[in-house]
Amino acid sequence: MQLPIHIGLHRSRLLARVSIFIAGLALCFLYFFLRSTAAFAVFSALTLALLAGVFGQSRMPVRALSLKRDGLIEVCLAGETDYCPASVLDGALIHPWLTVFRVEIQSMPRRVYSVVLLTDSLSAENFRQLRVFLRWNTLNLSEAGEV
Image (tube, rainbow, N blue to C red; front, side):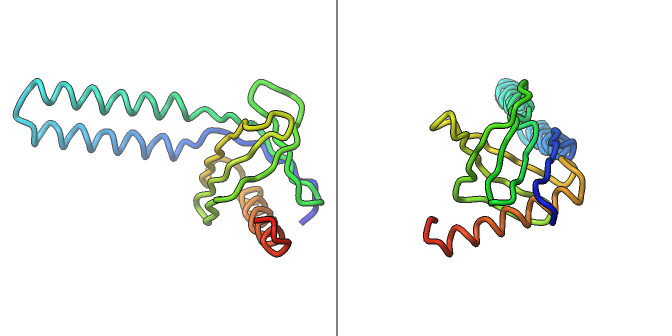
């Protein structure tokens, strides 16, 4: 793997489709099993509000990543052009189809961003490289006793 690697991120269409499907299932369930019109209206409004919240929060706060040779990571936030040094926090979930991790911007302490990536959020090769980088970085930190 040739470092540094610059990875551009975008919103996952798969996550949007799954969210719409689950909301549709919930509305069908409510329609067929709730006999009260008032209860149906209330629970339907709650389901649609949750769906709107999912889409409101689904914008990517991190626009791009830069993986460095020394194990550090830099992030480019949405609306900015410069990369900021960041650190990956504990508790990353790394799977072949889903990767979730949190980054903390070093110049802005206590500013933490969650990054949720599905296979369609970036190219397949970049997704593989990111997963390898995160696993390798986690292994090196645990061997050094920092985790």
